[in-house]
Image (tube, rainbow, N blue to C red; front, side):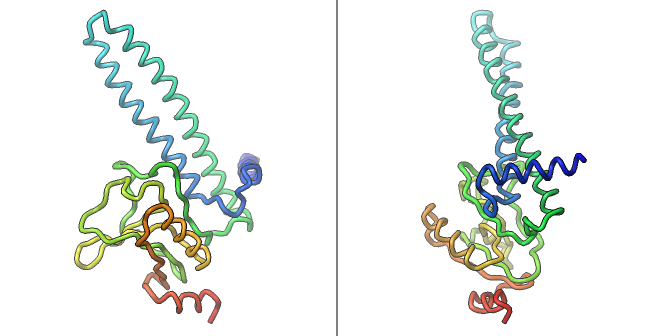
Length: 218
């Protein structure tokens, strides 16, 4: 019963947001992490303010208390939003497992208002790649790991360590070339004009032409 309610909830959410077929699990999780990071930051600020309150002169304590009350209310609101998005992510997973409406091979790409990555949650590097044909958007090759917000709101970001120790960064994960092509145009408009599509087959890079042939079943 509990599982069915979750599945119905996420289906209702997708339809009413009018993003069926466009929203991805990664987008939902990224939003949850973004609100969670903001809530965690406020909690650290509240701890610092509590310490400041204990040592502040009486003339300044009322002002600090007012700031603490405002930040506490905001932290509660942000945590609530994070929890809502985490619930939606869990529901999306259940819906994906129990329904043919959401494919496990759905392309993943989004441009969020802010980077979903942080020092505590950096973009993954050298994660295992899936089998079959897929595409990514190469953003650049760097000597050292980039800053967590280097690619702003692009998500998902992934990295690959090369033989020379440099790191190649990608955006997105696409199982159809048309999806990758539409996304790379958005990436160019977003300011990363040197980005381009890279094709993979069984975890190895191949030409775009061959990838499209394999995608079509040739």
